[in-house]
Length: 416
Figure 1 (cartoon, one colour):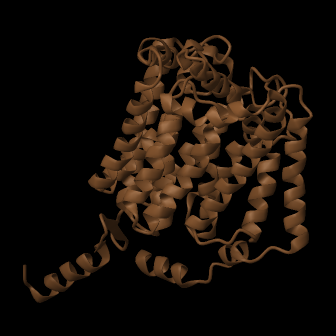
Figure 2 (cartoon, rainbow, N blue to C red; figure 1 turned 45 degrees about the horizontal axis):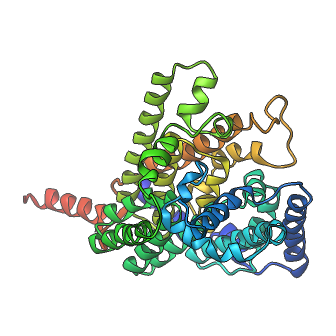
């Protein structure tokens, strides 16, 4: 009976999904872009912009002057990033002050469009308008644009990887992931997606591209060993007192609430391992291929956000656009109110007593990261493979329903 009810619900028209996919009226699109542009203008009105990008540009200038980019402890990227920033050295600081926030915002829009394409949603749809306006009201996006942080490149590479994987182009998806890792190793957890899919050749590409780029760049960088002896320990220790108040990982926030550091790390590791296990459960559950790719890859990234040091609020822009785009499909985690509640504290118009201070918003950020991870993880557990559900594993579809019916027929006939 449960399977029958499930089938009838699946046959019902998805009114919400069809409405979200529909073309948005021009006034709605214009209003969404206006909200988006006003947030960018608010960033440009500040005294300092693009300060994270400035670190990479400064490293590139040091490299051109014959020095090591790792002389600056704030340069936390692989050596290929210094070469990627060389074109920016041709521009003056004044030009970069205006250009970097605008370029970051435009790249954020590219990531939204790529996320929509994973589900075949057009760029002028109602959902697109909602997402663009949402970015303008979302504090992590404001911070990303203000900083000019290179996380925006991962926010593009993540949905492009999933789009290519959905189309069966796993090696191309791996190259995109590898290229993003070569610039900033944020998408390393996505390599586990290729493991779950048993795409070993693609996994070799995903690991080989950043390795080749980094080795080639390291050969041309003075004193590249500083990355291992100085930069990597600096990252693993959660950077320093300047960055620590903005870190939203469990192992940093919990000690600020009085939890002993060893216990905080143990709790963070346990939470991350649980989310990783549920990512595997979500993969095995099958279902709509686009939804499975997005939710599984998002769980892999969220597991890293829970335990890694540091874990900043704008990291969530890597996974959120693709997750929100999945709202066009019935039964996704995004259609639960529990997905949206952790995001409410991050609305720019909402002011929270005591937590509104820039050095205290990590307490809100940990709610966002943990809440979104919990919402997707719980849905993955509830929707795990069970009788009456088809499961796709490595391209093969297994029907538990047909197996159950075959057993019943065998019992009635008195055979095997």
